[in-house]
Image (tube, helix red, strand yellow):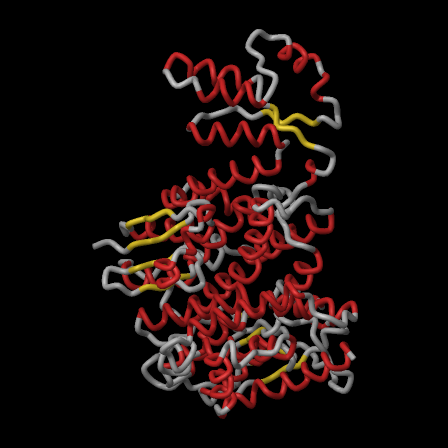
Length: 571
């Protein structure tokens, strides 16, 4: 029996999985859910996926999990004939994982927040600074593609599918400027020409219709909803009332036409009754000169982005704007790329022999840095730690941007010059290359898929919320935490409470890198919004258990610095 995939068709996450399935020739039983009817909130669905997200996969043996990034990795690992889409080589896989977490933590999150805001009518307008920040996402993608054919190297991977789905979402309202971002524009065109892009096309078209109808004049939205309901196609002509397009000769000439219908009510009624074949051509002809989407001055400037206060802080490094202590001397940053072209073959069945410890550029208060340090301590790996001064802008110097154009921490540099950033990608890479504890990142497809899902839960939901709360405190001296953020933190704790039901650790019966990643952010969030032990007893017990691990000391040092910073800032 084919695996079952529950989807909301316009969702970019769902579209990426459909692309992956098509690429590997896997038939899926696709079951669409109607979010507007709350089908993702039914008891039956919540039993499968307590986070009530899409897509959710139910494999032929009943194994159930969610998160598109984890699903894509799992499907390739289990069903693909080759590992091209998700390489087994740990260095190549590390780059793919970094791109996947960039998608879940930045690109996808940016798009989903704004799209949902538009669809539920809470999003109205944005300013030019927001446009600039969206273009920064494109700029990073353009850097990722420098010297590469595809997003993670010279061949297509699942990172291309996830980022393509998210980028085409962003492109709905903030078109990619091909002159500024030529590599991104070329990459999109290349993917659009591939057969698996069909998995993205239909859902994207639905989303375009939904978003544009929401951003158009209310009477036009009513007509477009009617058209969608009866399955008609219209040639939409954008009219700028501010510029007087409705007063030009072309429009006035149409206004006098015998076929002109002048109110939404007449148009809707007429469309609804044109069901026979002879009428359909007339509908198309009439609507071609009839349906004019209107825009006010503000609506002409709508773009896809989230609030500046949230986005600008989130787009910075993984906690790069926390605290850089005055007493810590900034370290010189060595960006020596010697040996970057060397290829070394490793016997993964034997311990890796190395002459130099991997270098990690970091700041102690950063939760992602702390997660990596916990992982290294757990596998007994010595790291050459380079603390950089973010206040002085060490992360923005040319020599650092050369190794990490996203200018984030942690950033790992191997002795042969290979570079990797994003804590999740670094943790899984270190365990795969240097660790002898398979349980930290299991090779078993099922167990690894659950760990991957938890990692993306941290990068896509938990960490962005921490950033949103901390940003105004650090930069603007805010003294209180909004009720919306308190409620969101409680929602995160509630999800974790469900994840831990019947489990000793966050992804099963053994400690994994998911525990390290989540404890770094959850212990930080707990400083801001206390975990209520009565409401979330399993979460509180899990935190205490992790605190009892020897490797937790690597989290405690930076957490204590963070606590003191927040105490000073909010006092």
